[in-house]
Amino acid sequence: MTLVAYEVRTNGSRSNGVPTRARALHRPKVMLRNVGWVCVGAALLLTSGGVAAIATAEPGFALRHLVHLLVGLAAAAIVAVPHYRWTQRLSYPLLAVVLAMLVFVLIPWVPDVIVRPRNGARRWINLLVTDFQPSELAKIVYVLALANYLRFRSNYRRLLGLLLPLALTFVPMSLILIEPDLGTAMLFLPTLFAMLIAAGAKLRHLAMVILLGLSLAPAMYPLLKPHQKDRLKALVAQVTGDTRYENDIGYQGARAMTLAGAGGWRGLGKQHAAALIIYNHLPEDHNDMVFAVICCRWGLLGGAATWAGFLVLCTGGLLIASQCKDPFSRLVCVGIVALLFSQMTINTGMAIGVMPITGMTLPFVSYGGSSLVSAWIMIGLLLNIAMRRPRYLAREAFAYDRTDIEV
Image (cartoon, helix red, strand yellow):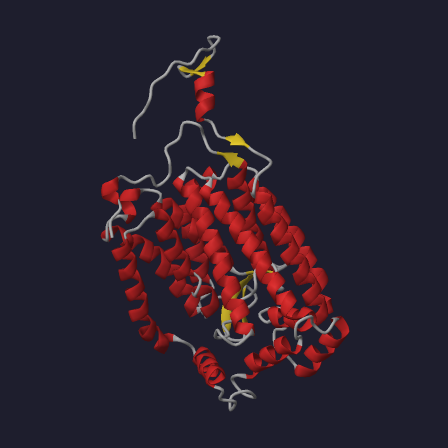
């Protein structure tokens, strides 16, 4: 990069030997009118739709979802106000804390009053007023730590430099898988791949990462719990038209597809949809399978509107990333978009029978305090980055020389 020297006239005011106006050229400015509000608006619409869908399936949980929304908005505001640079400085310490919490929930002698097992899974820490799921926070901290590492070109343009990103991925991913929480663990690899692409990793290195992931997939199968293996069997049976598991291990998937298809194009309305949901006994109708409730009540148009809301949100996040000159902020935006889009794709795929059921929530829409608050923290980070106008005198992020662009 060529640095151009020029003179700045001032009235003699100086700070630390640097003219004030010259310092202003380096200082980022806060811009209240920005594309980040598009992400906020899309998230609010999705959460509102979630309240209506939850009220259809489990009316008692709708008010709680609104309370969780208020907590999420407060968390987003707290994250959005200070400069995002503090997240870069704290990314590694926060990662250490999150990994410690992921280990803590797996310790077998921790009393149940502190770590509450549910359906054989140890994922939640009791905070008296609510339960906290460390894996939800782990997703955010993982993006911050990975972005902090990948902001240096020398860290990802070498094959050996990719070892640390792989370690940053597989350590929390393995701990979450042991809980077990297959759904959340599945989000780390697509996020890693998207951030490596955004950073500019070499294509041959990315191909090696993909081959490594594909080769390790069969080796991970023996580590799955029996119920997780059953869900894979049920998915294969659904795809092949085998109905023998519909009243057994494939019951939840079969009920979800039935209700999603019952909505047709325009849906059945609240009362009719609520009655069908009750008599079909759809498990986790307000949580993991809320997309089936949306399709039942509002039909294909409601499902398409949900997808459109996520596409608007993700497009806004990518536009924010495109305006960033700072590598860290750009990578954080890409990582958040990859996380939210992957989670939405997997969850909606579960409801229509094209993805295995993994117990994953639909961001902003499904009932769940930790899930909703963590999703809004991501929105707060996007808004934080969007508000900071790029500095005038700043190096372009990821500006490669011709010799850097290698296959």
